[in-house]
Structure formats: structure tokens, C-alpha cells
Length: 153
Image (cartoon, rainbow, N blue to C red; front, side, top):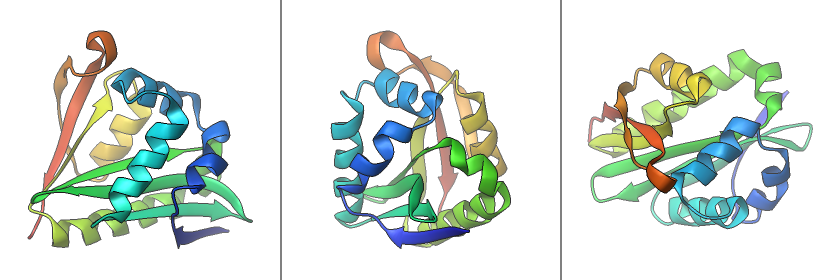
């Protein structure tokens, strides 16, 4: 059963060794440095005026996610484990719930996704984000697509 709790920076330590390969590669290709410090930083930034959450299955981390505020823009992010596939329907419903919440608080939701990560792009499209064309954005010119959605704030 998928459960939720608000995340602490140390939750990055729980999930980092279990990340899906494409999630780990995306963090690296984005140029945010080593995976664990980058994830800790994301949680800390999200807890400072935004939110960070953790989905669990029987106490084991499934996905770490959040939204970091930057002026009127919310920067959504998520990294997960292979366990997401065992909870696909609930995961989709829960992530749509959080995106709807964030739209109430921000004029725009926006971030970048690795252009090679087709599964993430498909999920973001399902959530109704607009996906832009690939452009150099990451480490050594790695190609990323900007994704965005207008909020209600």
C-alpha cells in the first residue's frame, strides 16, 4: 500500500541507493553534482516555502518529490524507485493531486526534464504539462525539455 508523509532532508539518504537508473542519470546530466547532496538540497529548498513529500510502501521509499518556490514560479521535481510500477494507479492519482495543489499556490509550474527520459516525459504529459523542444541545458550541453503548466495563483 502506498502511503505518504512529508519529507525530511535525510530521506534522500533512504532513496538515493534505490533510484531508477534514469532518475539517477537525470540528476547527473542536469549538472547538479553528486546525487545524494543534490537530492538533499532539493528537499531542503522545497521545505523552505514549498513542500517535499515521500511515498512509501511498507516503510520502503518509492518516490521523493516536492516543489521549490522561486518568486511566483513553483519548481516541481520527483525521483523514484522501480517500486513506482507496482503502484502505478495510486502514484498517478497522488501526483495529480499534488500538482493540482501546487497550481493553487503558484502562477506557473516549471522545470526541465532529460530529453532522453521518455517515461518521465510521458508522465508529465499525462499530468497536462506542456513539454518544450529539447535544448542544451545540462552538464556538457545535455539536452533537456522545459515543462510547464500555468497555475491559478
